[in-house]
Structure formats: C-alpha cells, structure tokens
Image (cartoon, rainbow, N blue to C red; front, side, top):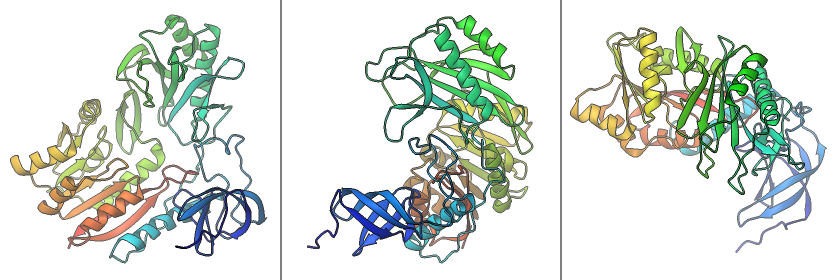
Length: 455
C-alpha cells in the first residue's frame, strides 16, 4: 500500500504541470495528483491542502511564486465567489488553447483514431454574449430583496451590479423588476421555509431586434400589483415586448414551472439566426450565445455536405434551429425532440420561414428513431445529433450503425460523453474532423462539431 505523500492543512510548493477539464491547475508530489483551482500551467505556487482522498487531493493557492504570462487581472468584482465564469484570470486566447487541449487529451486517451483537434473557434468580442439571464431573488442580511447569482456551490445570493457575460440591458431590466418588488413590498421566496412569492427573474433578449422578454417566476397563483408592475416596466424600458408570470410552487432546483401566464405584450420573442427568423417562447430552448450558434450551425451544415436528394434526421432538434439551416439544402428534414412545446415552436418556425420540406415529431429520440426506421422505413442519408450533456443512448447509436447514413454530424456540449460515443462508432465511421467552438467564453465549457463519414 502506497503512503500518501501529503497531509491535509499543510502547505507545499508545487509546479503546475497542466490544466484539467474545468480549468483547474494540476500538480504532482511523488506522482500524487493535486487539483488547484485558479492555478495556470507553468506556475510555481504555494498551496494549502484542503482535502485528501485516496488517489488525489485538492489544494488552494496561498501565494503565486512564479506567475504565468497568461495570467491577467480579473475584471469582475464577484468573480471569485460566483460560479458563472471560471477562466477570467486567464488571457482569452489561452483559454481557447486550453479548450482545444482538453478535447485533444480526451481523444488521445479514448479513441483508436489518431486525429488532431482543430483550434477552438473563438469570439471576436467575448463579452455580454448571453441572451438569457436568470437571477434568483433573495434577501440580504438586513432582510431587503436582492438579485444576483448563487455563490459557487451554495445557495447564498451574491448581489450583482453588472455582469460581463450577460446582455447589459437584460441586467438593467432585472434591476427594474427588483425596484418594483421593493416598491410594492412583494415577498421574496425562501428556500428554507418554502414561503414567499418571487423566486426568479428571467430576461431573454433578441440580438437582431433589441427586444426583451421578462419572466417573473412565482411560488403562487398570481402576482399582486400586476397592472402596476406592467406599467412601471414598460415605462422603464420600451424594448420589453413580453412579460410573463411563470408559476412554480414545487420545492425544486428547477427554475421554471410548466404554467405561464402572459401579462403584457406578445406570446414570443423573435430573433434571426442566419437567414431564418425564430420564435422563442418562455419554455423553449434557444442557444444562449446566438453569435457563436450561428457560426457553428453554418459550419456544421457546410460540413454535412447535404444535397437536394438527401433525407436528413435532426435528433434533439429543439425549436428547429439547425433543421431549417439543413432544410435549405436537403430534400426533406425530420426533426425529433422530447419537449412538446419546442416541437410546436419548430413547426411554427418552419411555417413562418416557408420551409415546407420539414417534419417535426415530439417524443423520445430512442423510440421515434426506431419507429421512423423500422416501421416507416425512412432511411436517412445524413444524421445530425445534438444531444444533452449525457450524450447518446446505446439504442440510438445502434440504430445509426445499423442504417449506416453516409454522414453523421455530432454537435456536443460535453467532450467526455462525446468521445465515449465516438469510440462506439469509430470502427464503422471515419472521424473526419473535430472542431471545438467557444460557446461560453471565460467558462470551462466547450462545444464541439464532429463530422463522421461512413468507411
């Protein structure tokens, strides 16, 4: 049995030899691994060991003895406590290299294919890119209502004055809602007691039309002073096009309940992606960074090399964003998505963009795909998948391997589940390219587009 060469609550001087999956620094003492948040490859650091497990430990920085040339002054006052970004202490270009390396390391470890991951596709302006803000509402130590973000790994709210990744006007609108809460003395939800009314403020924005949708999440059936709220908000910001009350009376971490009540304006927000206008409802998913989503979709569709004779399956299609991009080039596109309301929006989006060669089906991908192939005998030439973080289930992978479309394009928001799935497909498919996209600048997340050609 090897003895562990370090002790909890002791200080050590270490060299950071690499950065891990979430941007954390990695050091070794006698081959024993230590993870150190906020440390950068190449730095020499004095660390305090805060947790020791059987095969690795966690430390925190006490002092940076030798600093990396990639370390920058953090430009955000709440950065250390908020979990929204985790790479603000690193020069932006270097964060792109780190993301490429994370994907490359996973590929090298898990795949037989020798493939070089392309450099990460970054943003010209990596600030204020989020088109969806969601702030919890709570009270400060004096009992006054506050909005902000949950402190990392806790449910204590850090009040936020401004945020470098959120749309600036969205933050301002959230503050107007907070002003109304204070003005009309409306109670704020407490997780501990599960009492109080207002839980969250959500603001969705449209990059092309400069319009905003406000969703006030409440633990109750109606919002007191509703008319006054509407009047005050519409007066404070003329760009607000919709105000919804969302009812969520469950004791849960899920932010939105299933019931929405429109109290002002239009049923949906509209935004352009590429040549298409999309309707966005309170519950429907829309890429949070529309600038990068557009770049990624254009790239993915070009790489899919779709022709006018092709039948395309778009699995996990959401509100049909990439389906429409593909329908422009294809004979027919079938979109599949489990969220009923997203499929409704997808159908509306196809209709308003006059794309008649699409069909959208609500249901679990696993079952719908089997039904399309086995019962309806529809065999696709190209399959596009954009699954949630957990990746593809085995049934879907086996279905794809059985029908052997000539090309599969896999969009992934989790490199770990991506390489796991690719390892199951690489015997039958050639992995042509892996292109990372920086969808969430200054966070450790990386999205990838992988093109697979039938061997």
